[in-house]
Image 1 (cartoon, rainbow, N blue to C red):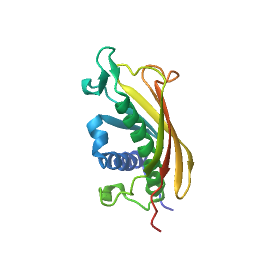
Image 2: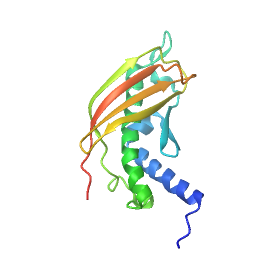
Image 3: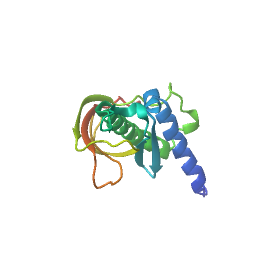
Image 4: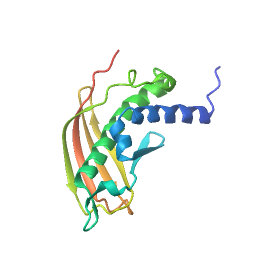
Length: 167
């Protein structure tokens, strides 16, 4: 009987898969978005930068930066959900993942953002929840907050065209 892999090896494999996925989207790095993984749940962080300010009189985060943060979080969550299954089943070795071998990202069909309050000049966090994911279509909800998870400053709903899967 084969012994189970040590938890550190499993964690490293998962973290490497996520890192390769996030690195494949340069815009995410340019915005300063990072992802933390706990099991299959992701939390995105938009690190504060002065270049993200849209209204310096308030100051407030730019609505476009907020929308990009939410859409990036939704897209990575969807792609991670697909990649997670492939990594866990052993069909994909994260060591072999390159921009050429990563699964294609879902394509946005529509994305609606609700700005609930002013985004303050500080770090922001977001989590996406896949509401429905089929072979061709997925629906995702995202919430972003800053100091208090119970007081989101923005929320979004997006619909995505899922890439064809091989095999």
